[in-house]
Image (cartoon, rainbow over all chains, first blue to last red; front, top):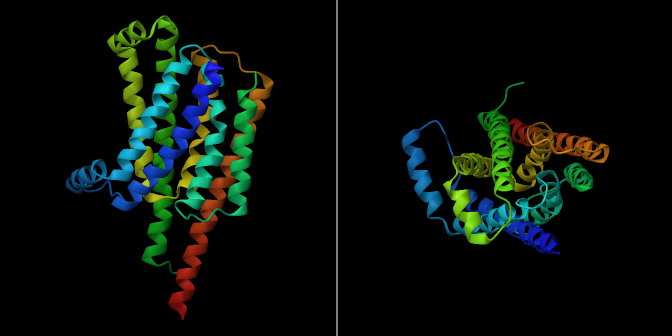
Length: 122
Length: 148
């Protein structure tokens, strides 16, 4: 039960984090790694972006619950249990970020989700 | 066929994104192995003692540093590509995690888990193909627009 609650928390926070992070990074714009000076300016922009910071907050929640849960459960069980993140984050991308998700992409995502669930079985 | 600069940069951007994602995946998987090793060694007896002992250990910080590197590359990839592409593509990390857990942490990996690994691999290939088709479709669109 303890494990289930922590994993649920980890999954929800992970998807929310993904959506906020993407929104933040898209607001900042494409990052070019060629120019180190520009990189610093972009870095400052990224760190002061509200969506990005909200993303970081949710990722922290994810990370802390992950750390707690791996202290007693197998890594190759906890990690695969995150399978729902793939579907949740894609739904978030579709509805909050207005991305187009083709049938082929959905098929791939469902296969990934199934595969991750299979890897979470003993 | 002459490709426009825009179409070229889009395709180059897919390559960049994939490179960033590969770094994300391997940094993540290696970081997880280090963290899991340390956490199991400490065990779950009391929160504060647990945290204090974790923070003291270089293995813990090394694992965390790798996860930070992985995160930076993930964020950079998100500035270039769709979330609905990046997230399933990063699922390849589960495959790497299972393999690493098997080799470095000596966790037993059953046939069911290996089947899951196969499913994920096929899924990731499909998602990659969908992204490639999307970039190709966009290049074509730009070319027809120029023809007119």
